[in-house]
Length: 173
Image (cartoon, rainbow, N blue to C red; front, side, top):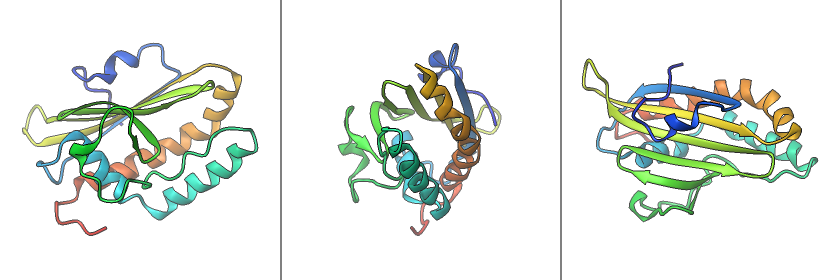
């Protein structure tokens, strides 16, 4: 685990958050933008992560929370250049998109989740580094209760999904 890059858009959301974490991995394909890195990771979501999302969706439906779908529920082969703020990208809504950082997330009455995929050269080697940072703000008791099982699972899922960005450009689905 690491920290949010100080020059990132998400860094200003960390103070006062209920939960936050950050994970970094060298980019296997330096030609991709931050959104491209996210799409690459989402398209190669491990099956066990999709199974966890299906379980999550089933359980939360009992409490009236929304079904987010699966991380790899992407719009077919939609080019990254066609995504605009407000578009759904898998389970998230696109908030901001620059070549070096994409902010995605979900907002509801219980909690707000913001995810950043930040792309920048590693300071010592210059190798492109992808940092995945998640920030959660809870609004009520249900949000806190929701985070009890989600936080430890997130700490397993986030680095696992991020590993896909370290693979080379010719990675098969």
